[in-house]
Length: 317
Length: 67
Image 1: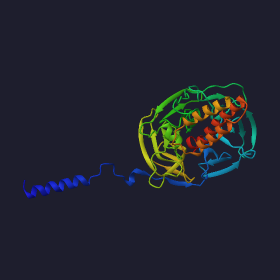
Image 2 (image 1 turned 90 degrees about the vertical axis):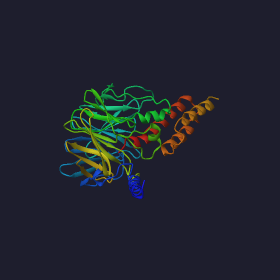
Image 3 (image 1 turned 135 degrees about the horizontal axis):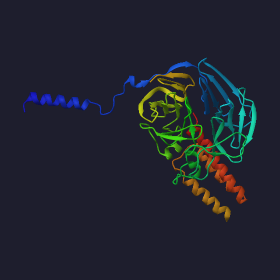
Image 4 (image 1 turned 30 degrees about the vertical axis):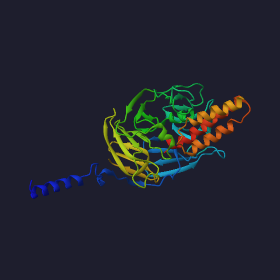
């Protein structure tokens, strides 16, 4: 081996050592969000939302109804007429246009666009969530035993409810009962079709449920799932599914926590926007330039998101 | 004696929550359990314990379900 060969080998070895072993981040991997209008909400928690076409309603801070007209780029906020200290959770819109929310744990109230309570229905048992499907309210009763139906459906004010969907609460034998109750809470997103996506906070999967409760479960590949322990002990729990929306072609749009960039871990919202086909076929995951809290509406090819800063912004993957 | 047994049982259940938990929801749950354990009546004490768990679930709900 002569000096020239040694020099060539050294140069080759140096070049190999300089190669990165991980993926090289490119700015083109980041999906920019184009602001449309806003801000429409502050940093308060959005505990429920409903949509119909270009209209979106949100329950903000447990006390306010926020109405958004996406086409007209208009927002209106109304305080719900609650007694001091009362808070609401969840928002259901029925097919007759009525809006309902859970007041405390023991009543559902109908609210008008100005926030007035027009009807008050007492619940015999404590409840933790409420949604709407066609003409029925979908209730999530606080369940101290599992497994069991996670959701039940009923007409407001009528006695008796029936199990709705195949979603079943899971036992978490290693965890305290209080933690098990929390992990079995259901969230649901919007949809342009009769099937609506719902999910548990610890799973990378959605249940697509139609008005009658017929359920298809779709596993969402490529999303990071953390242990229940991590979910319960982190101030900003990394959720595989933060929000989901089914567009008119049946594609599932998913907002996922992902990993925040340096300095961004405290900002509310998810950093990944994923899309799946109607049967769960992966269609790509994009990292967002800024975190997003909700998918307000999705159409084939674009989505309108509520950003962490409270703006309505457009994402075109 | 019953009160002592219930307190032990409640605190044992609390210990089943991950020991690394620092969220205020969990610490509030512990305080609530402690207060519930001091109630004289068994049935009111039991109901108070359940309310503690529901309060915890509502607290965590904002982190796990809220946007």
